[in-house]
Image 1: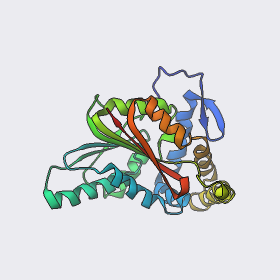
Image 2: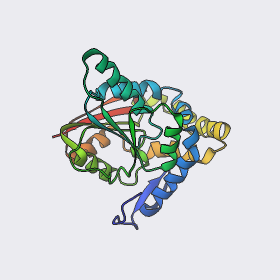
Image 3: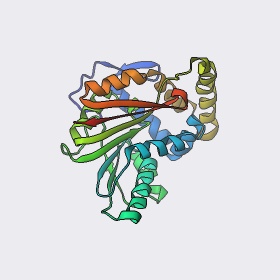
Image 4: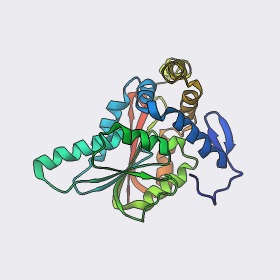
Length: 258
């Protein structure tokens, strides 16, 4: 989990609450242990199924290639990694090349176990690791993607710094995350769905209203698009850009480690 040398007295957000940094990792682990078995169903509920389209867009932007080493950090059950494996396979059919090494990295053992139990993760490498301090050498990856995971991390700047550390020069970083609506008039409808419908679905589908309530609140505490882009630049990424999806419900950020 979180590195031991962090300032344990400092505060971190856990939904709308502020908790000691040392506590957030434990609390988030509890949430994902609770939802692991229904994680993909949870994503359908939170995004009305749109997460599937957003992930396809993210993989197209990442453009995984044969022979590359790609990190899917906070990869959960490997949904994104399976998409990358399929895309690389399609390229190999056209022009050959070595398999890509796609590492599914997550700090939560229950999430990794749920991914393995799906039984369709051929070609994926499952790794237990904290996004804030990956158990990997410097400059070893061609690409790094984190999808709907960074907002759950205790120290976002630490995640970005470590992402830059493990990327090769010219390596590409992508982050897919729930964000801020760009169309203000839709906020009342979005808020009603987020704060009422999603927790109710959590209760109905998983008998777990509290975990889904946290996940909704965590979206509101995550930096908006411009601020997160600035954080990426502060971490040393170059040519940082972002694209709003579904009017800003979700955003895809990308940049290069130069």
